[in-house]
Length: 285
Image (tube, rainbow, N blue to C red; front, side, top):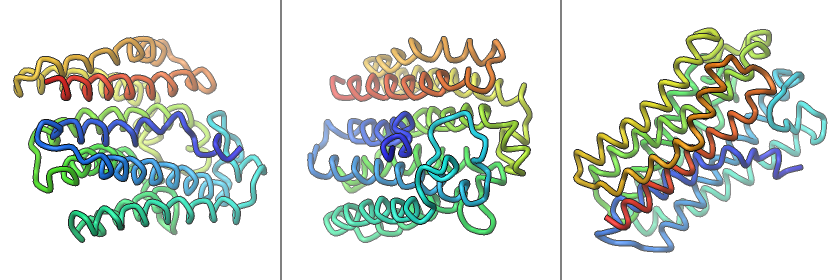
């Protein structure tokens, strides 16, 4: 139950930026424990954010009628207090591992970690959650794209990596597409609950165009970066098209409600395949 509540199909958003960011600087250095620590922090933050979303939406009543992944509070399978404890434990674990990284690299990582925890909680928590204002996609791009990818490279080499920074863009776009399709699926229910996500604000047709455009743009960026950086092996990231093409086709055919659940899964697979392809491409040169 708790595993399902953690929404494992969204976890590629945590795995991919760490893998790509680390691989971007692997020719210079590779410190295994720092890579593992960064991965644990990213996964813990993702799980904590998912639990926090479950808790906050559950107590607001937003999750009373959902067609997506299991909602612990909304379904009544777990009490709000139990889910809130899971949030605290998950954020706490991320904080402890992040502290180890900060002690080894720089105390400034504590600021980044605190900002990440705040972003995870206030997505749907607090009196004025930014997820209810249509800003969720922006924060996902920043934290699960730019921050996670660039940060994973930084903890390895302790300096700025332009390659990691550029690759953070397609990584972030893939992560954003995951939230776009999630919000497209929930658009009608969110509108009824006054949850003004970007999908609610843009409407059905424009959200579908945004999703498809984001997916295709991410792959286009991989091609551009591969050519600009002289790293043809980065094109291995295009393997993600295997999962992306049917997902885009389903969205453009007008899939709604439960029919979008497989699309969400395919979007996660797209990000994972593209991310692993880019990671391998970076390692082999």
